Image (tube, rainbow, N blue to C red):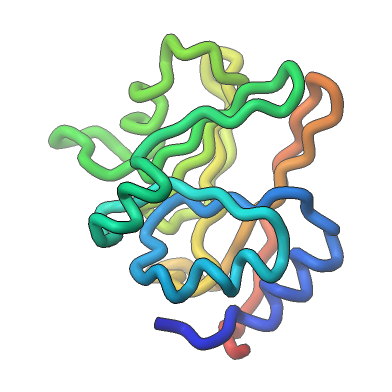
Length: 158
C-alpha cells in the first residue's frame, strides 16, 4: 500500500539505467505497479500474498528472453517440507534450459550457480525481515554473459 518507493531503491535503479524492472512476487496491491512503471518497463510474477488480479496479470512463473539468454522468474513459495526456497525455485526450472533464475519469497539475498544456472534472489527493498539491510539486485545481460549483483541500504524511507 506504499505511496512511494524507497528513495535508495529509486535512486539506485535510475543510476543503473535499467531497461526492465522485474519483481519476483508479493507485490500485494495493484496500486504499487505504476510506481515501478514510472522507473522502467515492468514485468513480474505473482507471489503467495498477491490477489487473483495480480496472478492473472503476471502469472506465477515465466521465462523472459534477452537475445540468446533465457531467464526464469518465479516467486518460490510452495516448497515441500524441508526444501529451502532456492532449492524449490531450482526444481521448478531444472530442465527448462534457462541460464538464470530470479526468485523471491524468502526475502534473503542469494546468489549461486547450480548445474550451470545462476540462481538469484534480490532480497527485498521494503521487507528485510531478519536481514540487517534492505536490498535489490541488478542483472546485466551482455550477449550470453550474465552479471548479477546485490545492492543494500539501511532505510526504506521515500
